[in-house]
Length: 278
Image (cartoon, rainbow, N blue to C red; front, side, top):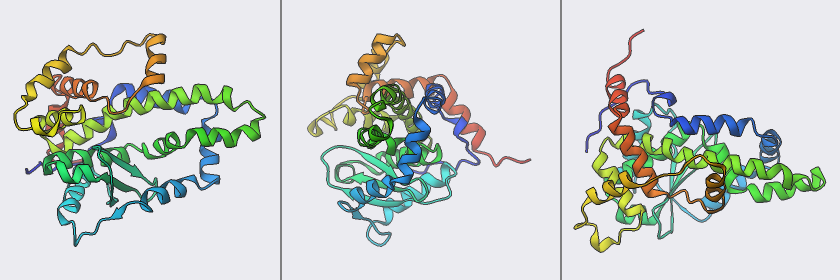
């Protein structure tokens, strides 16, 4: 595992077009500015960070030098100047969460550290660094605590928060789903190994550990190619809004495979492998 250094990479190099569109919709949704203001006025970010850091173990460079090296590699490749702090939280799922707009921290699940290879961890950490670069963290944190925010806002709006929140909640959900695609692209640019990425998606999709060594990753690829995806009809969007799941492993695998096969991944790699001169 020796990923190439990339130079001057920008969000536009890997942002999914549907995420860019849904971000525009979210920013134009009625009530967002008020919710953001309340989020900061109430100090909610500190509360969220306390919840995570108060129940998670902070990792040190002395005890976990390999993890910090992976994080530094991800930051160097994606041109992110601030190296986030690392925490581990007890969980039986493969999850990673980034908190903190100004001073980000990445919280990795214990399952990630126990079961994933270094290249897979590099992908997972790369995804989170991509979220930092793309400035996803504020909207993710609002999504974490949205119902509580709207309950607090209800007292101010005299019960109108339900009307305001329905459109905003939907816009937040739509953006969050599309942001997963962008984060995956960032993860691939960091780990630079499509096989490892597909292998990880088999685990996210639920492949039991006893089959990890024998399972043919091409089976995931075949399923991803056959996956019909979601149309943009209103009813389908409504069903996704009610029953969506950000893990979405097969749909995400499909998107990353399409990005590579379209040649866009290679174009970014070639473009950013050389130091850009004015």
